[in-house]
Amino acid sequence: MHVRHLTLKDFRSYPSAELALTPGVTTLVGLNGQGKTNLVEAVGYLATLGSHRVATDQPLVRFGAARAIVRGAIVRDERETMVELEITPGRANRARLGRSPVPRPRDVLGTVRTVLFAPEDLALVKGDPSERRRFLDELLVQRQPRWSGVRSDYDKILKQRNALLKSAAPVLRKGARRQPRAGDPPLEEAGESALHTLVVWNDHLSTVGSQLLYARLRLLRDLVPDLSECYDAVSAAASNARATYRSSLHEDLAKRLAEGEVPEVDELRAGMLDTLEQVRPNEIERGITLVGPHRDDLVLSLGELPAKGYASHGESWSFALGLKLAAYRLLRRDLGDDPVLVLDDVFAELDSGRRERLAGLVADCEQVLITAAVGADVPDVLRESGTTYAVVLGQVGPLGEADAPEAVEDAPETVEAGDDA
Ligand SMILES: Nc1ncnc2c1ncn2[C@@H]1O[C@H](COP(=O)(O)OP(=O)(O)OP(=O)(O)O)[C@@H](O)[C@H]1O
Image (cartoon, rainbow, N blue to C red):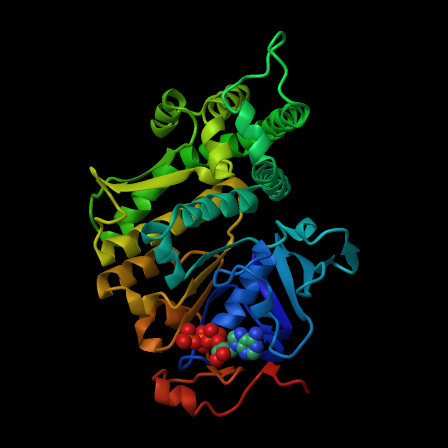
């Protein structure tokens, strides 16, 4: 698939912009702060309803404007679909597919799929577990959009359960060490009722949580062989790069998951319920849910060593890139179609060997969107086979022969993108 046309209205720094795109490689070159990343971020938003740079929508709306619009014409199997998202912070976002509004923005997921690699992805290796969970879950949703609903259900249940743990802590403490069984002496009424409510939330949490966990484990099983290959291809080393699942379930089950086993959903659900019972006093003490996919992690390792804390800077880059390229391959295989590959500000961070090898790996992708402050950082093989634009103060124009930053500053005319004309 590819994006044929991108329209922005009050998105980031753009009052308005129209950008025509073609299959193959498009490189956007410009000095810092000119609006290159804003353009590819918009493409990513169409695919994920989120940004790789910020967790909320507010910064995506041009400062002073009330709402932003991102619209893309997406071509897949020679059929074109228009997808439009209206971003209104503080209110429900709206979406259209073709000419028709859809009930919820997430109904457009799957129209365009992207794999985006950016400097922020270094956090996949060096950052908190939440970064790796997000990577897995976003890939899950790109693979099968219905997981977006499951994720959101899980988050809602978790929120409610945490609220209960906090609000009912004093009464729950009294019954914390007790399993409610027939014949037990009664707790005082409030404690009894809170405990039963907690048991109901355990049920919801484990039902939805086990589905999410199962989906993650299957995804990981499919991703790992490509991860090792992609890492080696980028770094030209035989590294044995691996990713294993670290679960918050009880030790026996967690050990099996770490070994790559994917038990049935029912077993995961039972394991989650058991573990919730075990940790109940601790949960009540702390007022948070300690078991479930939201507490899990992905352990990345190179040979015998964990990547986090041990991998060099270059190795960490290769690892993050390996994960993203593996995600690309997985989606390509699953969909029988290429997602749009976005490489945002990546080449400047890589040594020349990694640049050239990455170029070789992505040259056959249906559409690759690249941003770079210095055009010369992007391997010739990519720039020569595709189109290069200069981005200057939010204007996108032809670059011509030269690609030095000075030349970008002097880019003569602009096409397609412009002010609020
Ligand atoms: N919501 C917003 N409203 C107005 N301007 C914004 C908004 N968000 C970001 N900007 C501005 O957009 C400009 C361009 O940002 P962008 O990240 O696209 O630059 P870039 O060309 O990719 O630069 P770099 O090479 O440094 O990564 C920045 O100067 C930033 O201040």
